[in-house]
Image 1 (cartoon, rainbow, N blue to C red):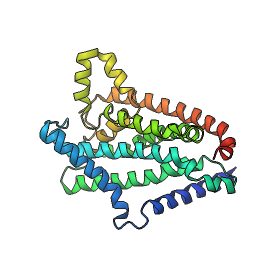
Image 2: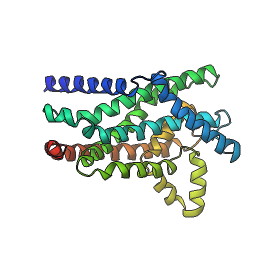
Image 3: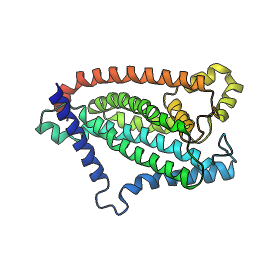
Length: 274
């Protein structure tokens, strides 16, 4: 058992390392592309929404561009991991035909390579906060827990998508459309209070609760809380955020367990479909 887990862990690390090398092969900037893309998107969003539409972050102490940057980094980790993991089994079709192995290693390795980028990007955000004098709060110690919840959600959804994509190639196209819509119903461009106020006017509290049932919203809001707002209830009260995070964690756990069961059930047929 321990030997098998060790072998699978080594294989996951090897595949993740291979993915990272392949991604930046013959690239001059290398890893910095993973920072330039979200930085460029943040610049565009800042120009349009902050300068033209006058959007603001919930706190005057945090500039809008930093609020959006942290949100975009989290979203890129989520969407990028889903995209890579969904295609991971198909991308390793030749290897699967030659060697018998547990196929779960492919989506897990894809998530790991994206997680490495995410962690390094967050480290740079922390440096930016210190350099620009925004300061750090002790609440940053909760950062690993928030990231763990988001990663668990990614893993669960990825197991479903990567398995189904082997049999139904339309899954990747639906994922593209789904993440496009998902981006705009997640508090990335705008703050949670701004969205909640409009939803509350139109539907009442049930609409706000339904909006926060979006499983990506609580981790992103919590990430901003611990990284930018020093644990202050700038966007949502502590009790409410903990409830929503708990719901997201429970849902992610269920999705991961059922996703793993589906993956294990379908994986013996992968080689015949590839």
